[in-house]
Length: 114
Image (cartoon, rainbow, N blue to C red; front, side):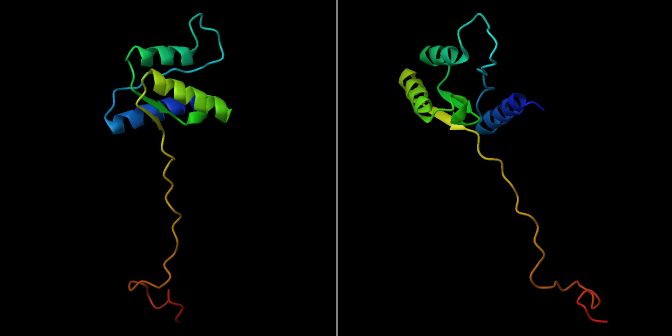
């Protein structure tokens, strides 16, 4: 599955868990759309009051330059974003570890007795 599609599905799921409406996706594809760039459309929508919460896979989506990320986050807050929420890290269950002590259900053979 393409990474952008996985992010889109994860954002939809996260919005649902938070009780938010389905997210509107502003995605840079690298292809000219004849329209304004996605970030500009997002800033305009926030300024017009359409969005107050922005969900992102991570702030890295704004730029690979930390200073630029901070400028974009500041701009979004200035135009009206109340919260920028990044997807939580996926939960990874610890690997199963065998018990340190044998359980009572073990047979004598399992305990190493003949």
